[in-house]
Image 1 (tube, rainbow, N blue to C red):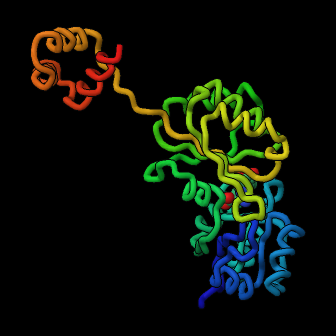
Image 2 (cartoon, protein in one colour):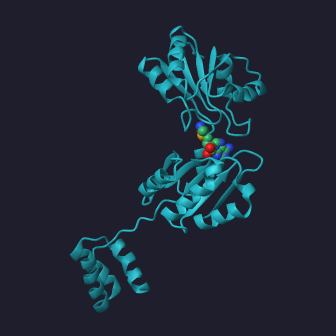
Image 3 (cartoon, helix red, strand yellow):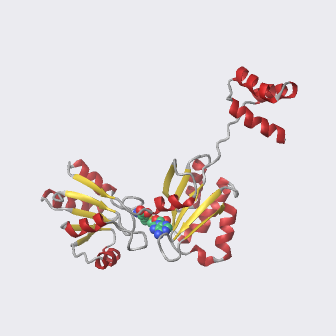
Length: 279
Ligand code: SAM
């Protein structure tokens, strides 16, 4: 395996130490240096797998300086691996400055894929996965958080957020006020750990569930929100014509004729006719 002068972005477990690939372990043993977000935190994993590779820290506060150091190591032909405290580096984690620096220099950056809390949560949530957006952590301050949520209120793709336990309830409450208390959501808590829980309900019921037993608010969480339903609004004038047709000719014909006259799809008109019927 060629490792000289190559940077490896290595995913590590998000709780269960067994969730690491054979390739990741091999790379961590073979490189000359590991850059870790928190060297003490990562020592548990490295000890567990008998990895004795030298470790340096790379976190938000020293990333710029450390990137230059790592670049030099790579230029000398050394192999370096980047790991963070949990999951895939750079996903709401440090590493992006390092990767940009190394790629700009023309050296190779290789991903060693593995656990990621957002993807694990999404895969078991039951929410649509064909299209989703990853928002990571919302702003901590309530005003900025509400503003960001407002921008996402009509987003139709599944929304994926990370949140820390002490802000969880306040965030769910802000989500209720912006998305509506009936919006369906899933809380994925403590994934891969002993008390893993995946709870899906309306935002209102999720808030109740968390308040009823405050110990439920402890741990690590991914919040997934069902996308907003795509409601096509039909022009009132079109609706007036359609209503007239519905009152005078058979339903199927009225839909076909209104589609012909207005250019609105039959499918949308059909849905609108059901609404008209209900009102
Ligand atoms: N890079 C990591 C990844 O690939 O998922 C994410 C790091 S981010 C600093 C940490 C956040 O990820 C936590 O606050 C939580 O929202 C989420 N997270 C990490 N591990 C988790 C787990 N086992 N269960 C649920 N959420 C988790």
